Image 1 (tube, protein in one colour):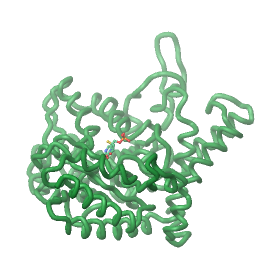
Image 2 (image 1 turned 90 degrees about the vertical axis):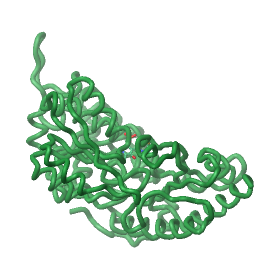
Image 3 (image 1 turned 30 degrees about the vertical axis):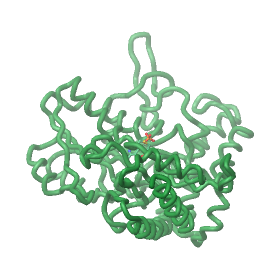
Image 4 (image 1 turned 180 degrees about the horizontal axis):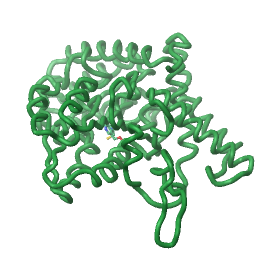
Length: 414
Ligand code: C6P
């Protein structure tokens, strides 16, 4: 188990770990960072771990016997061990380093799905998926003639589980869904959905891009077959993510990319793939980033995922309460009890991009657009939303600044 609550949750102390939170924009406004769903900020502990690696230990991994190569390999593999523990995988060989959630999902689509799915086989997705859990399956549909069905999203931003149960009667081969929506914030009942998928004879792939950073995720308790996530949304660097997979599945899957490090032996006309997890990691990987990823899970573990989730819940409840007071503002997604720290909204008669641009004048960073979930926006009959999102360093004061900023936007547009 991960070490929990080793330190008391102290927001002032936590904010000191994030140097970027004290910077100002060109207009002299202090940055109010409300875009952690796009990417989180990085604490000094992560920045320093990567810095120290380049200053002291930089060398390629798995290739040399010299001191630096051994140190570098130990740091890279040590990070994997800690990431595995963080999601409660039973062993580090079940954790494949990838570039991000997108690549993790593509790994499953290219390796497992191309080897196991045929024309007519059904894959169930949901209407709230990020493009990274839609497009790889659409590509496979075009290539192999698989079928796709979608669990509908209800008006209040939840998955329609009755329809899911009906779809399962069609004996899908795979159910792939997001644990937490990046737009609605909805936390889906992953354990129940996976159990139902298994009862129907399907495997379950979970997009954990938004859940692993914010919730205590236990892949074994969930019984997920595959679980995908990105370091950059959980205080880690960009350029690295992970795919958890059950070892029996990973063992049976063909390699994804070919090249150095993923092989045991190569002849002119053949090769033998390496053991797990290296079989899926071709070429020189993102070594410093893996070390930063390890430092990020150490950081989050030290604070405690339960404490982080409690703090985010408090901030989100407060934000929803305050935003709901604003005339002409419509929020999307369920109540705070069923969602993570995301508040996507539209303002009557004002384009979401204008909202974001005007907020930016006061240093308030929110994202505007379809957030790579275009079909979900279409479902709600809107092209875009403005989205504020919260993380362990977010404060009620920042929520107040957002609300004041929105009133200013309304005034400006009359
Ligand atoms: N969502 C957002 O602003 P990558 O880019 O591979 O690290 O993560 C992709 C991804 C997959 N699933 C979900 C649920 C996500 O939220 C994201 C990334 C960011 O909402 C960037 S578009």
